[in-house]
Length: 152
Image (cartoon, rainbow, N blue to C red):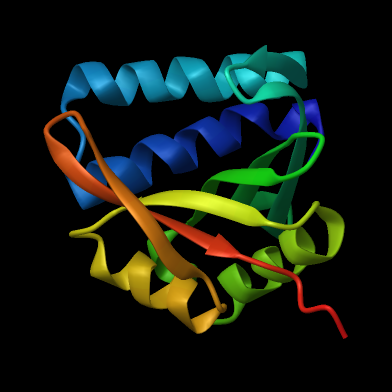
């Protein structure tokens, strides 16, 4: 990822979230603003401590077709986003991004996913993420799933 990809990344987020239809418009705009600020700043601090951003894009020619973005803390990583454009899903693009995340981020890696987003839940299960807890955001139940690097 580099900053020249920013607008395409934001468009993918907006397009894919609208297709899912899980977020109300105000939450979608907040998500866009948060993603933009996160990518532009590259670091920050929250109740989990200080973090830095790691982000990847997958391209077809000059077009960004997917991206992943994670916040890496001192002792763990939170995968905030992994999106692939609809026409490129089920072609290995998400798996390539997930491989980058697992190879380049601290374990454990956790992520939130809306429970009703069955395709995403199945994808994360396939990539060895396990359910660890749940919560509610914007009146929707989400799952927190976690992957631990094997100790071999």
